[in-house]
Image (tube, rainbow, N blue to C red; front, side, top):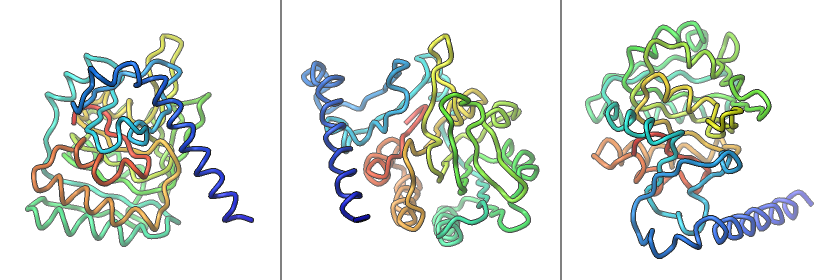
Length: 255
């Protein structure tokens, strides 16, 4: 019964994606051609995993709060030193962190992995401003009614979106390997609020995060392929389209 329910949910999601695709992108198909796309979503569309829409599959897509934030992110794009904490209780976290570290070190990037008692919010607040790349693994949560309480769980508790917004500086590339943190919720002004937009507001050039649940044991391979591509010079939006979009990940900011 569980397997049947999963198949039905998958079919329902595919049907919804096709319907949304026709409504949102169908009228623009000719103008879009095969170009890369920058999306500044209306409030009603801020929760979409854009890379799963048929017209955008395999295409470079960047999601931004505004045109101004996209220009700022373009100026900040680039990467060097990396920090990578792994939160507790995530199956496959150690293997994923090890794979990412191996790829980055092979590319000549100095890395530091925080795990066990070191993987704390306090340590993260101290190390994130000095890192160019951050790969954060943990259980994520996002309540649409309280988007600034979107959180990633670590050893000593949650890192909230409002914690990220208080950083003096965010990493240029932040990858959030967690459920839901690619989602955002509109403020009364319509501006999107959430973990990804909080990091962009503190100077991140690119944030990669999922708008749907992440299958912990299945993401190691695609995440490794993403980092290998970026280390070889592939733009993040292209690497997300090739390796992570099918898993619900978005490229936010510059691509």
